[in-house]
Image 1: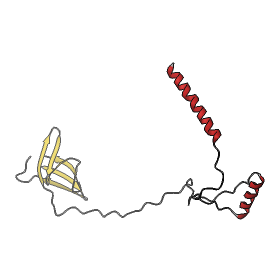
Image 2: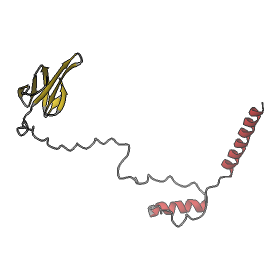
Image 3: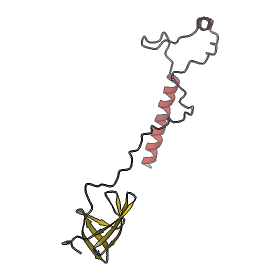
Image 4: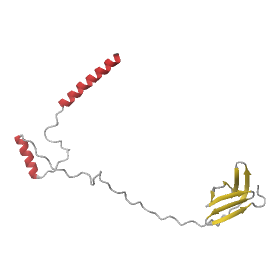
Length: 158
């Protein structure tokens, strides 16, 4: 009960304050402040406004003011075309570092190969070549438009 009374009292106070604020507001009169931007009106319209103010008549409707923004913010403008940069040419197969098969591992989890110090599975990519198949002592690679078969070197592990 106390909560309901508190809420009702708060609503009544807010209504009274809002009503007083709305009824007591008076727009500022007199000359505009010194830092206010000056409104540039044609001379004929300025004289018409001054005459209406002196006689107490209703002021004439002002013409549309020029836009402040350099463009209409609501008008659709298509996006600018993206800049296109040429792609580098496809690199030839690396000739400096030949691929060496060092070990193969076959178990129930799949096949692994150790090539140039990197552990790979079927489907992995190494130096632009994709591992196609791993068998005991043999790895088949495809890439750069060729197909390679690597064989285990002497001293390698199976």
